[in-house]
Amino acid sequence: KKDDKWGAVKGAGEGLLGFATGLGKGTCELLESTIEGVRSTPDAVADKVDKNREHKKHGVDTEAKGQLLETFKEERAPDDIVEGAFKGFKALGTSLHSGIMDLKDKPMEGAKNGGALGFAKGAGQGVLGFSTKALSGSLDLASNLVTGAKNTPDQVGRMRKGEECGAWERMNMKTMWEAMKESASVGGV
Image 1: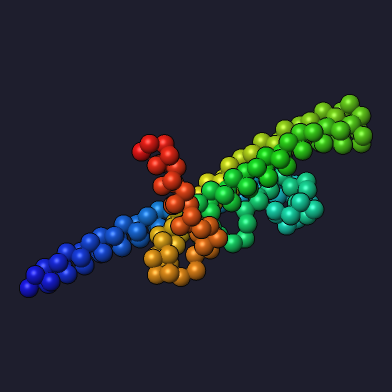
Image 2: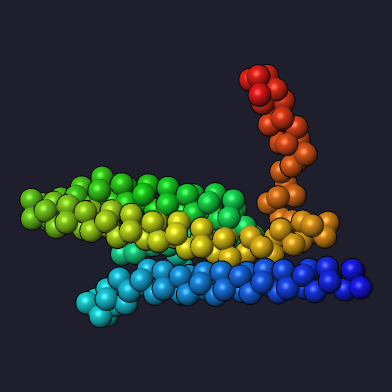
C-alpha cells in the first residue's frame, strides 16, 4: 500500500513535469516562429521595392555579399541552451562584421562608380546594411537561444539515458566538474 501511495505521487510529479516541459516547448516554438517572421520581413519589403534583387544563399560569404538582410544561422538547430548561445553569438558576430564591412566598403564603391553623389548613396547603403545586419544578427542570436532552450530538456533526457549528446559529449563534463571542485577548495570554500 505504501508503494502505491508513492507511485501515485511520482506519477503526478512526472505528469506535472511533462506538462511544464510541453508548455515551455510550446512557448519556445511560438517565440521561434515570431522571431523568424520578424527576421524575414525586411527581405520581403526589399523584394517589393526592388523586384530584380538578387537572391543568394544566406550564410556563405562568397554567395551572400550585397544582401540587404543576411542571416548566419547554421542549418542544424542547437541541441541545448549552451550550444544555442555559442551559435547565436557566432551568428551575431558574423552579422556585425559583415555590417561593418558595408560601412567601410559601400561609400568607396559608390565614389568609384558615381563620384560625390555615388559616395553619398554608398554611405546610405552602408548605414542601411549595417543596421539591418545588426538587427538580423540579434534576431539570429535570440532564435538560437530560444531553440536551444526548447531542445535542452530532450538533451538532458538523452544525457540521463547515456545516449549521444552532441555538444555536451564533446565537453568532458567530469573534468569540468572536477576543475570546479578543485577551484572551490583552493579558494577556501
